[in-house]
Amino acid sequence: MELIFWILSAITVLGAILAITLRNLIHCVLSLILFFLGIAGHYFLLRADFIAAVQILIYIGAVAVLMLFAIMLTRHVTGDEGPREVLGGKWWAGMGTAVIIAGLLWAIIRKDSLAQTLPAGTAATSVAEIGKALVANWVVPFEAMAVLLTAALIGAVVIALEEVIRKR
Amino acid sequence: MNIPLDHYLMLSAFLFAIGLCGALARKNAIIVLMGIEIMFNAGILNLIVFWHYRYFASVTAQMFAIFAISIAAAESAIGLALVIAVYRHYKSVTLDEMTSLKG
Image (tube, rainbow over all chains, first blue to last red):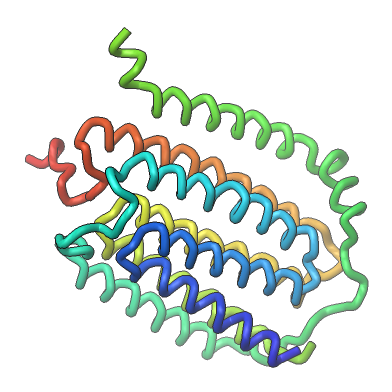
C-alpha cells in the first residue's frame, strides 16, 4: 500500500510540475491529464471510488478536452509558445510566494499531531448511499448546482460568441 | 493502510504550491487556468483525505467533493470562454499584453 502511495505521489507531482513548466501547450495539457489520473488513483487508494470516477469523467473527460479545444482555437499553429519568454514579468514574485506558502504549510502540518492519525473505520460509503443522499438531504444544493451549471453553460456560450453577435 | 495522515497533507500542500507557482509565474492564460485547476485538486484531495481518516462512515465529505468538482468544471468552462473572447480582441492569450486597463 505504501509503495502504491509513493508511486502515485510521484506521478501526481511529476504531472503537476510538467504541466506548468513545459513550453508546448499540448504537452502541458497531457501532463495535466497525468496529474488528474494520479489524483484519481489517490482517490481509489482512499476508497472513494465514486469521487475517483467523477474525477476521471469530469476532469479528464471534460476539463482537459475543453482546454485542448481552447488551445486549438487560440493558436495559429499548435506548437510551442514561440521564441518569446514563457514566464511573466514578475515571475520571481510568483515563485517566491509559492515557496513561502509551501514552507508555511509544511511547518504547520509538521507542528500538528496529525501524523499519528490512522484511518477511522472500515465501513466504506457505497455509491448507493451517495445517490440516496444526493436526492434526500442534499437535494437543494444539488438543484442549485444544476442551475449554476446551466448558467455557466449559457454564460460560456454568450461570452465566446460575443464578437459574432456584434457583427450581425 | 498505514500511511500517516500528514503524508497526504504534505503532498496536497506541495501540489497547491506548484499550482500557485503556475498561476502566478506563467504568461499564458490557459496555463494560469491549469494552475488554478491544480490548486482546486489539491484542496479536494484534502477533503477526501480527512473523510478517509476522520469521518469514514459519513457521506458529507464526498458531497462537498462532488460540489467542489462541479464548481471547478463550471469555472473552467467560463475561464476558457473568457480566454477565447480575449483572444478575439487581442489576437493573443499572453497576459502581459493585456494592458488596456493599465493607468
